[in-house]
Length: 162
Image (cartoon, rainbow, N blue to C red; front, side):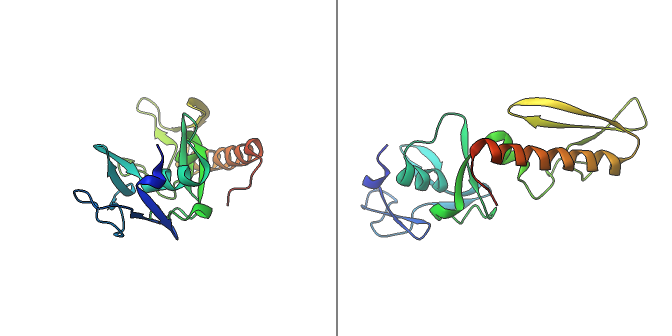
């Protein structure tokens, strides 16, 4: 889609080019959601970061996602956006998911044993990292694997993602 027919990009924000329905010419496009700023086009909600990327670089390859380098999903300046795999994007989260009862990423309590297992997803495949007696040890191994995965990803892409 030619996003330039709908929007004007200015310092990380999109502004409507026309007035139609809720779209008012010159008004900032989109609204905030828990997943970042989104805009409705053709009955679909689309992340503004995706639109900004495509306005500057063309279509996002299949299976790739937009990553905000500063982790602020409302900062859609082109210099803050990168195209990454879903696996990489998931491992960049600074917080533990809400449904995590242990409060530690990548670690699971073994129901039939007294220890913990840890695993990491790499390019859509789950890699088991081992069984550990303490949650601290399991967490340390997960964090090391996560750091290694990030280094490998950066090398494959040929760019440094800060």
